[in-house]
View 1 (cartoon, rainbow, N blue to C red):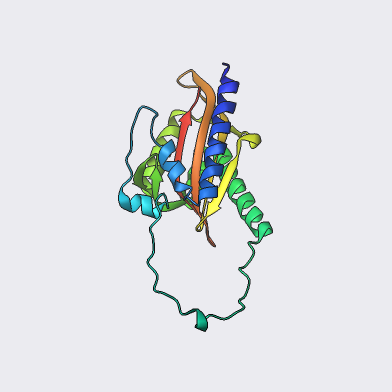
View 2 (cartoon, one colour):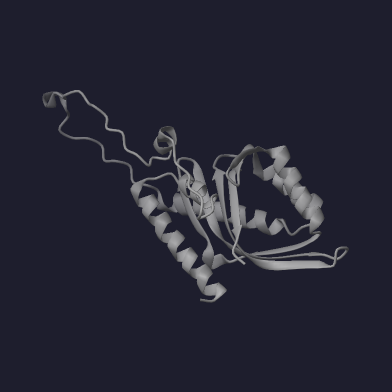
Amino acid sequence: MSADEAVAQIQAGTAQVMAYMTEMGVDPKLMEVALSYDRSDMRYLSASEMAEMRVTNVAVTQSPVDTSQVPTSSNPAPVPDVNSKQELEGAAVAFIKGLIEHHGDNADLALAEVQSSYAPTVDYYGKLTDLGSIIQDKRNYFERWPERGYNVRDGSLMVSCANDRCMVSGTYDWIVRSLPRHKQAKGVANFSYTISIGSNPKIVAETSKVLR
């Protein structure tokens, strides 16, 4: 199997899982947790995590209802605004795509983008990390590789929005170079970001994995 075929197979599998999770009402954050661990690792969810991410259902005991007091007619349930949902998903994709491609700017501009785009605390590669530490981690990488280029594959992008959060995942091609060290590297990576939606969207989770 070629590298491109492997990437396509991974994308197809991830899309199927995301579709099933959305259908079952599971929080997209569960996929973030799964992608932050290697296939050889095992991670058990706590009862509170399963409840928070809606992996388990809790039966609610209800008191008997006097049907004689129930109105014979009721207002219909609101119909989701499809256009609003599509606009939200499109904005989330544009936000993440722009962030990744801005990583190819000079270090000062790239770090300024990180500063304005991330929440004070982020689930950063499976670990809660403060913004200052994230900026330092990215500064170290930018200094090691002064020349960087990223190209997000539009066909790989997937987005799922629920409970004021959007998860955007996909694949990008990358190339980095350091002339002083006479080094260059390039490859393909999968990524996953979760955005807290609001008047000032912020990234609350990030993970990625180099495929080759």
